[in-house]
Length: 372
Ligand code: MRU
Image: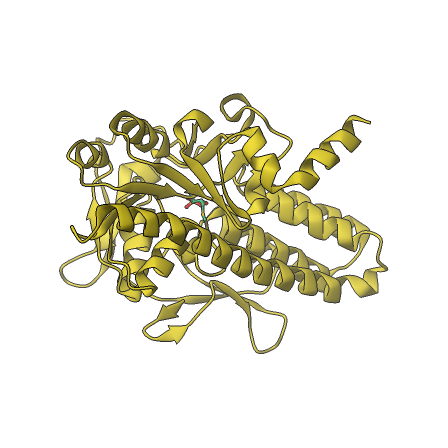
């Protein structure tokens, strides 16, 4: 996507071919800062501190983290230690485990001297694949928006609601939930996006709004509690969110508050779609509520707010009483029954085991083989 007209991905290799560069998402929307990652520790910190975030981008950064570790020491012990360090950074997005396991499995049989080049090649391939996956999600999802437009006729833009940031900043490019919106907009379909602010870290207000503004997509930031009211009054034609982990039965784990939007959508007959790349499906997990670890983050993300003052400075202020404790749950699970359909790179399917296996039949064979 473009920033001030210049094309960017969210992660790329510097001119030296080894240093990794990222956009520091903790500085957006006020400052555009590119960070250099030269070590495994810096890559792990970038994921933990959410300088990079969003399930697909976390996976891509972890893959490059392994490459940086192999550059420093390609031995067996360091390969195992680097994977373990990366897996500890954030617990919920399954793309992290997928990237660490798949790159590590490819490196293990190789002689140490061959590992750095292979690790960089694998990381680059994960990035390129993510871009293609997200492009395909965009194409499939655009069809859903076109259908709403056709049904609505010329009575105003298609109004979409999204939560958190599942745009290009959350992936390598395009995004998952936002890719269909970008493609519909680019195809001339009038769209308008209600952007949930997404407390406590404000990924909607800070990141989604910034992305949409850069691309010229009409949008309005709303407080997290507004969506239900808008749906009751016919102001939302469809919801699209992303997911950090989708179970084999179609439950969806996404940014905290997604579940409440799905409930409101269900109550008001508003379609609730979830965009996801294949690597976000955890085929080992059936029940989202009991089996997915929900990240709990530092309470200061809730008790403090950072923004730009009228004088132009970035400042952090406390908004709760000093004595009040805070609980910062980062994700929740939306049961499959509340999801109208899943939008994947292979097409749109019901949020169910049958729906997913219809698009990913090789997983049925893998499951049978595992059962022996
Ligand atoms: O805590 P974050 O900002 O990493 O959470 C991100 C989300 O919840 C996204 O919706 C999800 O990763 C899907 S990204 C395409």
